[in-house]
Length: 195
Image 1: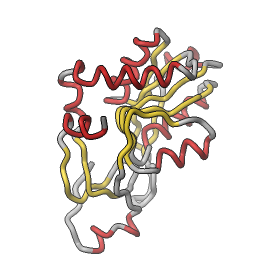
Image 2: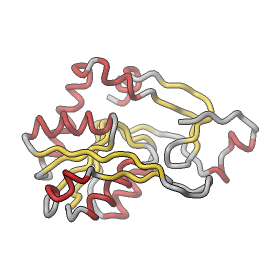
Image 3: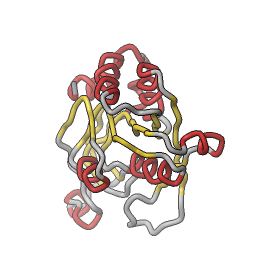
Image 4: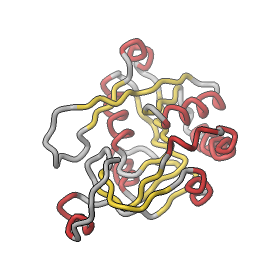
């Protein structure tokens, strides 16, 4: 599954800064996964069954692509759906996880006391699912799982372990992820591209 998903989303090699502030040598153009939703339907079905076993009341996905997957999962499970929106915040350039995610005001009260699975398309450093997790707590929800079609690297597993909830995914793949101070591409003077 990971290779077919990556085949569906063109990958670029280079030197990239991610939303989390980390650097990597791989960028997937995930927007292209949703040109033909039927192509990922089988993977969504597999992810849905993993999430079903956790008995969520709702599924939440970070905009944009994560929300598309979350909506597909919520539909298969016949549970409520919500999403979180990306918010820019003022932080130092070298801070990790400088982006916040918030559930829209109209949806916040609806989540109070509900068991919510956080679903994304692909998780690498986990900026979107981290932000969504902390805002769901602020809404009074109980996050019960992190899920994705594909998990790149081990950052998501570390975060899931730290917060004590399971991480479920259809596929996993090794992934290079570096803090700025440890990036070999920076040390080599490779031109940096935005995420």
